Image 1 (cartoon, rainbow, N blue to C red):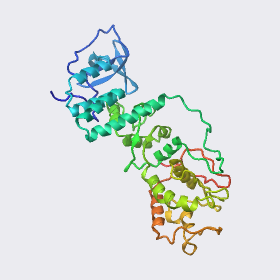
Image 2 (image 1 turned 135 degrees about the vertical axis):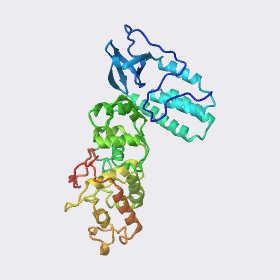
Image 3 (image 1 turned 30 degrees about the vertical axis):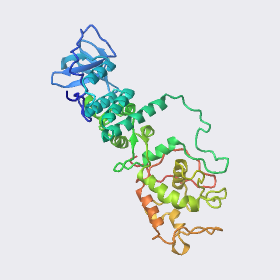
Length: 404
């Protein structure tokens, strides 16, 4: 027996019931709302959704979270589908246990219908047949991540001991960013040509379609809208960027460091910023002057992202930003670290200070320039409330937020 004819990824045609399911049309005077229905049109088009209302003149269904109205004269027939669990059982019965491809397709169908535990069960069955199947391994990871997000969403909100990251720590260090703020910075720095792993819940796509339904960027038919659910998370994030849907950015989970921030962590933060600049006797202590950095838990995400934000928000006494994104090599942050004789902006005389770079040809200097050049341009304004240490000067944005 061959694989069950489940819908392929990217297919705009909605899922059909299994071949063994009989036509379950019901009289018009019965309107079992809340049931899954399949509308079949005279032109051959088929649309599956949840029945909201049915009258002699029209049918209203919910499709991808949106209520759609269809005139009855366009509809050839209406099929009332069995409950989703029964349809799952029927589909499973006709797929051989050794049909890995069919089981993977079934798992995808279950994901589309929000049956995540069942989808995980089936993808594990597929991996029993072929433990190294790349698509099955990737799909299992995605299902597990969605289950985890679902479980976290069901937890009661934690009490916050510090509502905003604005207070100084007891050790006199700057406050560090929380996980939500770190994730938001990641979203703004995503390189769509080389994206990190992303996770966007189906409910977020539902909300995006509803909120921006009037935009030309949102498909205007249920069939084409359904294709959005088969798009990659990168494509959905790109759509959010085009819509300027900034209120949705926090709903995107970025699971890895974007490339630019990875460069900052590896070639700046870990290489010389922490070891040479953020020491207790320099810019990591209470006498840090105009620039105070985080040096506790130096390898943590909190320290990395907080220091990056501090560098972005701090300006020098003469009003120059520490990081020059137009001419990275001219950044005061870098020039102050070059030996005085070869620097266009030497470090102020401070007891115990030692230059980091011998010249601009230093490999660490060039890597720092590469990091600055890799950051998203034009620079966005992170919508993060953060209080710099009192001695530091906050850089007022001179740019529009840009396309993000």
